Length: 284
Image 1 (spheres, one colour):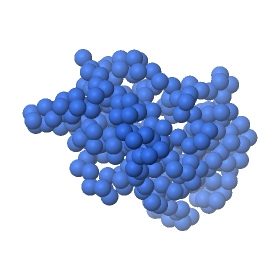
Image 2 (cartoon, one colour):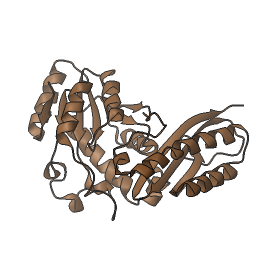
Image 3 (cartoon, helix red, strand yellow):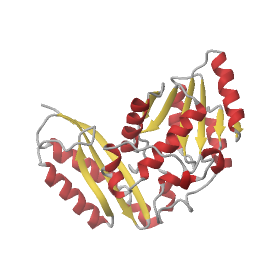
């Protein structure tokens, strides 16, 4: 039976008791409204740990002006039921005061330069500062040995890896694969914002990523691949923020240079902003 904990002292006591028994603790941070993609991260953490904690906290410091903080779906009862079915041991459910004792506006913040300022960071200024700030706080609260993050938020995964390395958190990071609906749309809590017509259009995002991979493997220049992706998204009704090819560290690759690639897209469909990516390799 999953235990829901709302008090930090109780959480720390539970984790301390596990560690006295020599058990490894896994952790999955979330903002709730959980789906099968989140549940797969519980299984991933469980594969490297004896006990698993999942947090649900809608973090205000990673939302910019005009973004969907107020309407982000809160479904704690359904989340708890889903986590129990997925094999989670503890649901950590902190309130705003527990997370930010002096309030979000007065909170000490963490900034990871470079990676935080391109792509998502350029289009959502301050977003990754909020992510790093809440993740660091959650790491301090939970004290995990292992933490699992999804590859759908590709840049976030890179930023958190840098955070862990830079601040010497003794935590093993695990990267969970993207889970998709049958039509290719990446699972996301924000998919429920889509109207029926938008939902029918949304899988075009994945099809564009597949086309970007095909063109790259066939030798098309990066500029051509990115331009065609942007044009295709516009024609389908999206308003893209970016559709780019990058190296795994988000650098611009030279045309024809062999090695791993990642195609990344962020685009609005109606009032909903969707992100997705596809990793592949360009062989010699």
